[in-house]
Length: 315
Image 1 (spheres, rainbow, N blue to C red):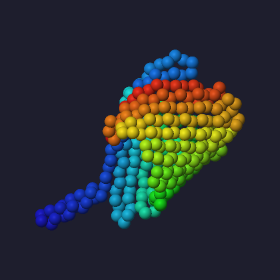
Image 2 (cartoon, helix red, strand yellow):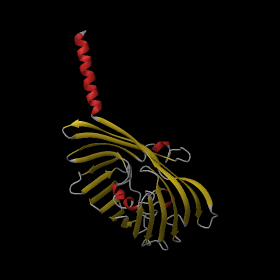
Image 3 (cartoon, rainbow, N blue to C red):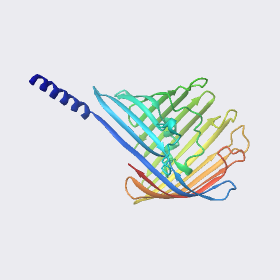
Image 4 (cartoon, helix red, strand yellow):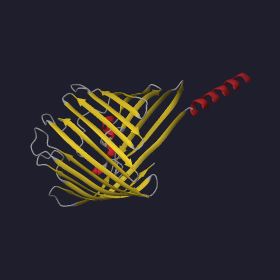
């Protein structure tokens, strides 16, 4: 009996030690706006709009010797209805990955948003985190695969980090290759991204600088056939700025997409002005006006504008 008790106690101690070396975090965001929207020549209409609400789980386990195992799963949902974003077949569609990390960096397997996007367009979208009706409509997201990926992220060295991934496209679909690099040093933040799937490709560079209460960012994006086969080449530019004072933020964001070389009347302009008031580190109320002027080709879905007020809460 004493031997059994001792073995049981040893097992309990070992188990508690294993749990102490693991951690799981629950996080998320609810972001909803009430908007007065106008599509093309249609009458203006009211809408309650979700802005990429989500809930996620992430965790790590210390395996010893500097090696860690990790995971992250993230579910997108419409906070105005409770419905799953993208349907239940893609329940963890925002992210689902397992990884191993150490001094060598991180090896990733699963599904995640292209790092080429995070390094460029997403980084300068400060007013509403590139979500909802004021999200970037001009950046070349393309058909680039997000699932069935194998990826690598380097350790941060002197402010520099590199990302690379390959995504299997499935039967009859070419692989997607994605590369990204970021450099952060004090108030200066720069990045670059490249993605390619067969003949479709895009490249972007980004810079952002913090100067006291002012933050200024910009990117340049060049793509081939992101809108569709035979569209040709296109250049896109975007500039954003934020002025912060106290709990207040004033935002301006302007983007211009030139014509695709083989699609007439395909240029477009998008701009947004916004105001955020931070009630806390996790909660803000905000308002914006956004406008998209599309060319006659309708590459970006036609003309659109919206007045919006909203609440965003992170947890």
